[in-house]
Length: 425
Image (cartoon, rainbow, N blue to C red; front, side):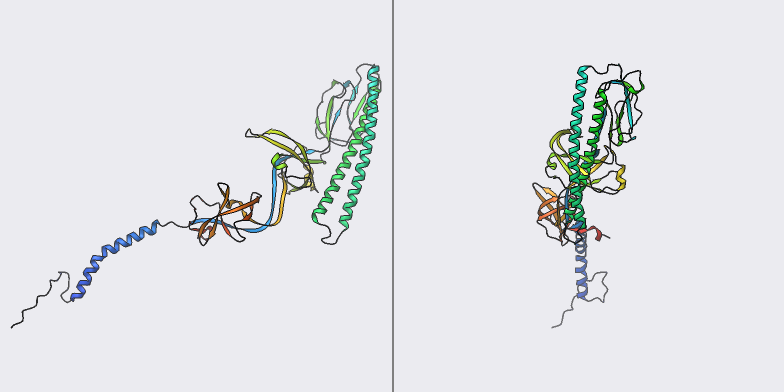
């Protein structure tokens, strides 16, 4: 039996005659898989391109620091004691030469002079009334003298307390708040003493005015002029009657005050005024100087009033008066009715956990924030306390050292991948 010749498999025209059978089979399989491999690589590239990049964010940390809550409002300065000079008797008033801002001295500066219009300046009834006014002014002067003695005694006592506190040099014996309170009380009592002195001077001048009304000047005599002199030292604030005119008793001529004796008046919303107490510290800003002026609340007036806001909304406001504490020399340029910014401290803690206010947002009635954890944003619910506008107290929900996202964009959700902005190169 003879062996039949073997038949070789057909060769591809591109295959060299020396390639083995196994090599040709592997190449065929690779060529068949090549389109599928390319398609898989394309799908992988598309998926990689569609994958979202981490959102760049700015972060802040929960820290422990002092926190002071303040009520801020526009205010204005005003002279504490204002004196309106009026005509003591009827007659022809001469022209007032003084202008607003001119300095006057008590008992020396002549404001104007009044000439009697007719010889019989007073009839019997008017004379009796003038004598009654003199008696009233005399009683008012005695009352002012008593008030001055009381104010002087209070000032001496406050100065003695201040001197005793200043004499204590042992650290920790007297707290800073007690020192500030004693210093402020001494300043207030000194201001009240000056006010009482002004009141006595006004009473003396009013008595002199009342006595002048009893005189019967002769129109043809040079001594018939009734000179109106300034009762206090200070500056002219406003001239009400400048031109020569026939005036009646009590006609307002001008207003005088001491620009160095000023206070701060602020119209505070009633809901904020209930948190303010006498003695609270005050910061006065935007008054024209770089230094922040220190003050202390002297009075919160008990009655409110309605004021229409710039948006047309009715608001209930309360006047809060503050005194300057140790003002610098530059503050002497402040005058009457100057605009300032008043910030009253109503709450303070030395060591509380705080978070930047820009990291918080509201969802319904709850406060939320995004915490930065392992490169992702985690939405956290927390309980927020008081805030000063820049930092907010953390009551619960976050711990000291936790990082939070500041002003996160709308694209950030719970679980979104994020990266710190400083890490982006």
